[in-house]
Amino acid sequence: MASIFSPLTKNIGIDLGTCTTQVYVEGRGVVFSEPSIVATDERNRKLVAIGNGAESMLSKSPETVKIHRPLLNGVVADYGVTRTMLGYILSKCVRSVQRLRIMVGVPAAASNVEKRAVMEAVYQAGAKEAYLVDTAVAAAMGVNMPVYDPVGNMVVNIGGGTTNVAILSLGGIVVSKSIHLGSLDFNEAIKDYLRGQYDIVTDDMTIEEMKITNGSAVLPLEDRGYYFTGRGLDDGLLKECAVQASELYQVIGRPLMKILDLVRSALQETPPELSADIMEHGVVLTGGGAKLKGMEQLFSQELGVPVVLAAEPDLAVVRGIGVAVAEREKLAPVIEGAQRIYRRRF
Image (cartoon, rainbow, N blue to C red):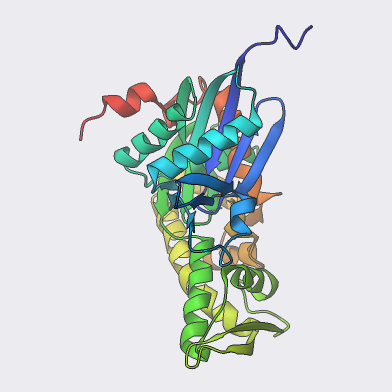
């Protein structure tokens, strides 16, 4: 009987990532983590698959099935498809009779128009209350950083399409920066390299496996080869090819340098008293892109500060959003509700 009379309002945190959408439900933890991909039948405009099911159809779907990636750089690129995806995800994660209080993470670089699009999609999906929080702030909360203490805390969240950097103290943001660059850009750099160097193209799944297996942020000690099959650009026939780990290190290094420049600029804007705290406690790396081999070693060498890779870095943001929605009163300065978003003028 206790479950019947339990409170109907449920706190939910959603990380609308370019690559993966994750959902945190109060009292249950992370209950959904699947690719941000939707497949629809163009003949009758019906939904075919979402998440893992849609991903399995990549490069294998018939002409009548269209694959959508409704999120770009951490914000809504296709409002209608995003609304459909959110409605489907929420129906899987919570009971329909519950009143939903939803918080979504957004990059620091998101414009007010982009924030309104996220807010509208969440309300259309069934939320009664909606809030937005900076992705980097959520990442810091998700790894239990002492954000309420009078000390400087620095977190770097490397997602699929966006990298967010934040320096926090006393529950507020001191410095926050964002760039539309993430782990998908590592994949695109590898694709371009294979196309230019070997005249060969291959599918996204192979590129991702290549990056995970042989990719590295620092020069690899063992120069292993990764063997794969692709389509030749000159004759269109299947070809076997091998890429060395040292090649991938150089290719991935180009977008990585831009991320490092962003972190350097944030450090340069940090007040001296907080810089001392960061030198003592270090920088925490979160996000799926931070799982690239040698990432913390590279950041430590280039920045001259201690760097730590968070445990389960790909879940840090969604867990932090779950904490933030429960502690929204304490985090009021860094949380935006509908009243604040819609009151702004262009």
